Image (cartoon, rainbow, N blue to C red; front, side):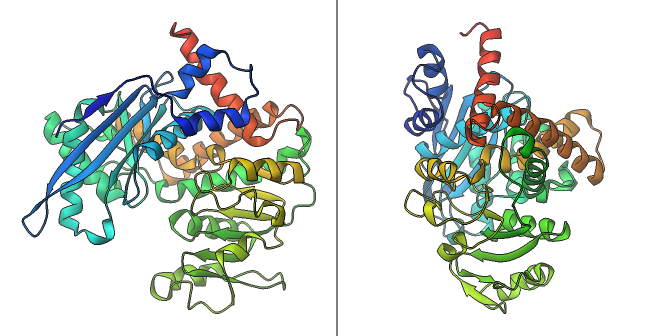
Length: 425
């Protein structure tokens, strides 16, 4: 089925709430608010897919292009049974801000298919991927909207989508998708780029934050990571390599904690055995996901689900820094409470922007037909974070604004500047 386009001027409710938690009434004009509160284009489709059994099944699919004033839309496609339009709109909104914070020439987009990949064969997943491209082909492409992997999708998904796109286009177009396998134009370093960006954000804020009024002098180099998927695993690995003591990690089955000895976990061993033993069989003190959040550590890195730290448990957080590696792991109410407690929250739109940073590099390499070494990619990503962290810290006005408020203020300012230059404001 072809995509249905919705441009009805309806505001994204959760996006409005996000803006209201950061901007005081009157800070933005009504025209600015209206422009920021609603997506530019909302696409939906019903994918009709032939299953292995021979029956035809329908799947709801979405693509939202929230704001494209600064460039083509950019954002992942997720396959999940709880995908819905409201979630996709909010994530597209956050992508708009994330790209602006890292100063990438992109707008924000997001997509999803309501399905359970655990119940689908490889063949069925491939057919869903190709049908998604057929539904939205008119609205995606290197200069329109550049999708990438997200929850339950990866390089293979992008490979199928790229192949289908190129069949319809009638020629090669590697820059139409990012997060691809290396053999199809993917970028070196992309697999762990989100985690590396988190490391850069953390260490640069620790290095520069004190000059801007952030109280970070007493932060010790211990860290607890909630969520041991791709992002959490690579974050633990990279921090361990850089001299941090990773004292606890967890996944949906529970977690392990090295105790108060201060020795930290044997991260390389945990990673080596993870696929075989999972975390449940790793030797160590058992800890639940809830208990992990409340450990006495220098840095807490929630890298799993949203709303893990809320108004109810924020008062029990002992970490000096919360590094948001997941999307929205701290609720707005929890965020305000942590700020009042003196806890520094490094927000998701900065902390986990490394993935879209290297996706941008992949897009540039595809357009040029010239590819960089892994070291070059990582060096370019670090430079991006150098510049972004410097701008965000300056925006805090000597610590008067939280890092989240500063990120939102900086990103919204850049988006509105582009809108004014285009004559839309």
